[in-house]
Length: 89
Image 1 (spheres, one colour):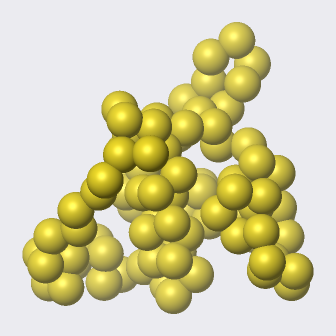
Image 2 (tube, helix red, strand yellow):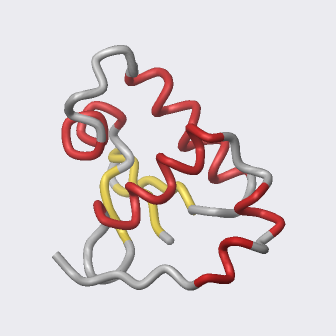
């Protein structure tokens, strides 16, 4: 897994500060989930297992909505390849 550096500019970013608490937690956790090129599966089931394995009250539906919200705000990009959903930073 690559090392990631989060710059202090997130504290003053209008986009980041417009995120809900859940959207922010999802976004930060996705940073550690993606590969060296900033890409990963956008399958909510996989993200739930890798990113939030102990959050029993969190559903795959919550994650799917969070991903769509993040994409709508420009924090991530969602796309498909051969019928599989992916995300990228």
